[in-house]
Image (cartoon, rainbow, N blue to C red):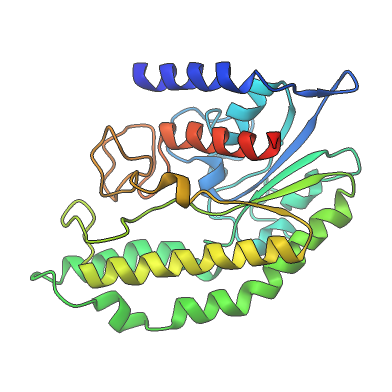
Length: 281
């Protein structure tokens, strides 16, 4: 916790160097997205937010807002799919797009990984298949699922594009930023048993994430939004690194304030820094 607070303070000092008001009024910032934005497991829920959304006061939208003075409306929610931008996810979590209006000035959007249950299946099923693979050989997840995830990502690209376009319709005066996902797995090799995936399945699942990021980038460009690359700047800080180095936790986290296979507190601060740097440009 002490290390996290030092990181948070340093981030706030850096971020406050950039003005956060426009014409004397706070900038209205709306955060949309799934658990990579809401930051489940951080043990500091936003008071009054839906319980199942696990929205943390130390997720990157809140770090940004606290540092800049922006007026934050955080609608990120764990397990949110693209469809939950326009349909209710839970009885107490209305469509995330309900937060958008003509007064919105900045929007961050990070979703798509939970569509068709992709992330959950990759984590739970692929890890399970590899735990049963006692000799850590081959690629049992790839052999089981083949092109399923790749096909689903390709088929879902138009829906992601339409969703980004709808943000502009509902918030016509906003700058829209589409976030990719950070580096979850290393570029080479594996780290069994810290992340129980064979070399073959590390490659398989890593390439699926890269394909999703590529679709998010393409659809952002095609629909008047700015893509924010989280993958490149987080290389070398993946789930296979030691506890002091990684920004994304492995299936069994060592940090108390992070969910399995999600950014930890440092990862959220790093994301806030990256987003603010892009917006500042």
